[in-house]
Figure (tube, rainbow, N blue to C red):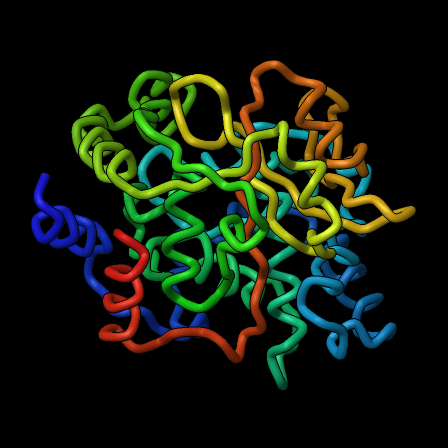
Length: 318
């Protein structure tokens, strides 16, 4: 597909809106008791963070600390599938999967930077909306959600939320021939796709656009050489060896004992855990091919201009 045509379709898929600050809400499409589970745990974490002055810490340091506050929360899959039809930002502190773990921790880290924020559940949902959805907007449509991590990296970099540092670390190579197709092949596992067959062709078209995005990754054989450059709070995407999607897993880096360890919601351990060094983790599974890394940025770096967002997407090859 020609680049201009591909970019037009990509921007069209961003639906109706220019990027807007996270305070612009699409969080009320469903009732709060559906979209937010265990506000007591959330408020206890935020109270501890505020009392300890974590808002003054660098974003990555703060993100890693907030991730540690989630250690021990059970692993629960498909926690984003909360309705048959209506899409809405959500947070579940009773159960996390790998994506919701890093995303909720990132939302709390960003929320601490907001002057005057009460730190109530709707405030966190606004932060999650800003990072979870294409262009940072949710109008109730399941297809507005970013479903593949490599697209999440690009869209959030275009909006100033993270920076993909993979190629800066050294040893990165271009990933070629990867087909992201999990959502359409395994649609029975996704409540919205199961209940709405008409969504599946549209999802297939979104997957085709995801397949056209450029991806650079560090093969797992080279990760030990770059481990010393990884910092607290770096978002670590685990690149899969096989087809289905670029990444099969995601977590946060945290420095401990001189090592860059992976903190993640682990299906094997059935909870959020602080695991071994990222290079050792990658080499423990034959299904893992390597690593992509995004570094979280302060909220002051947000891009709220439509023109700037589109220019950034073009520069990133989207």
